Amino acid sequence: MDHASNSWPVALLVTLWSLVIVATVKMAQRGRKFYIRRIPGLNAIDEAVGRATEMGRPILMVPGIGLIGVIVMQALSIFSYITKTAAQFGNRILLPTGGDNGPAIYTIADEVMRDTYASVGRAEAYDPDSVRFISDRQFAFAAGVAGLIHREKVAASFLFGEFYAEALIFAEAGQAVGAIQIAGTTQTTQIPFLIASCDYTIIGDEYYAATAYISREPTLLGSLAGQDIAKAIIWLLVLMGTIGLTITAMNYGAAEATKAFFLSRWLTPK
Amino acid sequence: MTLKSLLSKLFPPLHGPALYAALAGAAVLCVFLFFALHALPPRARKVAIGAATFLAGLFYALEWFWPADSAGNNPMTFAVPTVGNVANVLTAFTLGLGVMSLIRIHGNNVIRQRASWENSLVLLLGMVTMAVSGLFFDKSMFFRSLFRDVLNSFDAAMFATLAFYIISAAYRAFRIKSVEATLMMAAALIVMLGMIPLGQFLTSSLPANGSFTSIFRLDNISNWMLTNLNGAAQRAINFGLGIGALAIALRVWLSLERGAFFESTPE
Image (cartoon, rainbow over all chains, first blue to last red; front, side, top):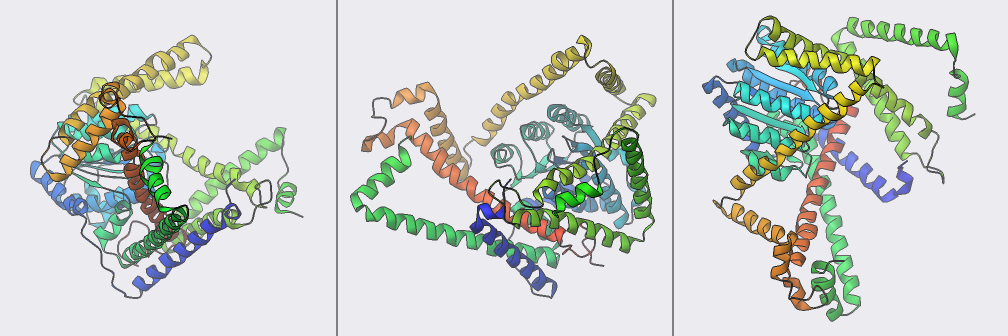
C-alpha cells in the first residue's frame, strides 16, 4: 500500500498544492478577480449548439467509460451547461452511458439532465429516453453509440471524459455524419486520435478548466488560479533539477558531458 | 486496543441464521436511510451529503498521510478494502436501473413498432438469453459458446474496425494545410519509417551507436522523438491533469463549491 511515509517530498508537495488551491478559492470567494485565457474549443460549444438548432438535429454527449470520479463529474458538469443552452433552444439531446460504471453514470446523468431542464423552466421538455444506458462492455457500447450517431444523424457531438480505443470509433462516426465535434479527455493516449478526427480538442488540464471557463463562477476561477500556481511550482522544480543535473554533468568535464548529451543520452538506444 | 481489534469485537464474524438476520437488518437499515434522506429538506440533505463526502475523503487522506510500518501498513490500512467495497455495493445497486433503462427504451421501440424495432427485439432477446444462460446454465456449452464464440467475436470485430478508422483519421490529419499539420506529417513520417524494416534499411549503413553519425539513423531519430519529445509533452500534460484532479477533489471533499456540484448560482 502506498503511503506518504514512502515519499515525504511528494506528501509535502501535495500539502503545499492543496493549501495554495484552497487559499486561492477563498480569495476568489471574497471578491478577488482572476484572469482566464481564451480556450477556442470551449468557445465553440455555443456555436455547435446553435448549428444543431439550425439543422433541427440532436446533440450527442458521451461521458466516456471511466469509473465514477472527478473526470465523470467534470464531464457531466460540462454537459449540464450544454444542456442548459440546448433546452432553451428546444434541441434534442442524447447522452448514452457505458462501461463498468455505466449504470451508475446513467443514474447520475439522468438526475443532472432532469435538474438542468428544470433550472431553465423547461422541466416538461425533458425526454427520459435522452439519457440511456447502452452496455457495460467497451465495444458493445462503442457499437451502440456509433449506431446512434448514424441513425439520429447528430449535428453536434461532445466527447468529454475518459476514453480508450472506442474514442476513434465515436469521432469517426461523427465525422461520417458531418457533426461538429468537440472533445476533451484525460487519456493522453487518445488525444492524437481526437485531434485528428474532431473539430476542437481540449487538451490536458484545460479539461478541468472547462467549468470555470464556461460558468465564470468565482470559486472555480480561484481554483484555476491555484492550479496555475501549483504548476509554476512544478516548473521551478523541473528547472532546478535540470540545472542541478547539468552542473553534475559538467563536473565530469565538458567533452564527456557533451558526448553524453548528444549521443549516449539522447539518440543512442539503451 | 487497536482500532482493528475494537471493530472485530463490535462486529464479530457471523455464520448461519445470525448472518442472514444481519443481512436482513442491513437491508432494512438501507431502505430506512434511503427514505430518511429523501424526507430531509434540501438544505439538510446537502449538509448530510457534504458530511458523508468529507468523512469518506478524510478516511483516505488520513490513511495515506499516517506513517506506515515496515510492512507498509498503518492502523487504518486494514479498512481500505471494506471502504472500497461500500463504494462497489453502491455502484452495483445502479445496475438494475441501467437494465431498466434498456428495457424501457427498447421495449417501447418494439411495442410502438418504431423504425428499426427489429434491432431492439434482437437486443432484448439477446439480453434475456444471456442473463438466463449465465445465471442458471453457466457450466453449459451453450453459455460458453454464447460468451466465447458470439460475444467475444463481436467485440473483436468492433475492435478491428479501428484499423480502418485510424487510416481515415490519419488521412485527414496528414493533409498538409498548415504549419502544424506539416510538422505533424513530418514527425509521423520519421517515426513510421523508423519503425518499419524498409525505413530502418534506408539508414542501416550508419553505425547503430557510439559515433556522431549514428544520430542520423532513422530508428535512432524515431526513438528520440518518441522518448524525449513525445514523452516530455505527455509528462507535462499529466502534471496539469494531476493538479486539476487534485483541485476538483479538494473542492468536492471540502464542499468549497457553494450550492450543489452542478449548480452555478450560489445559494
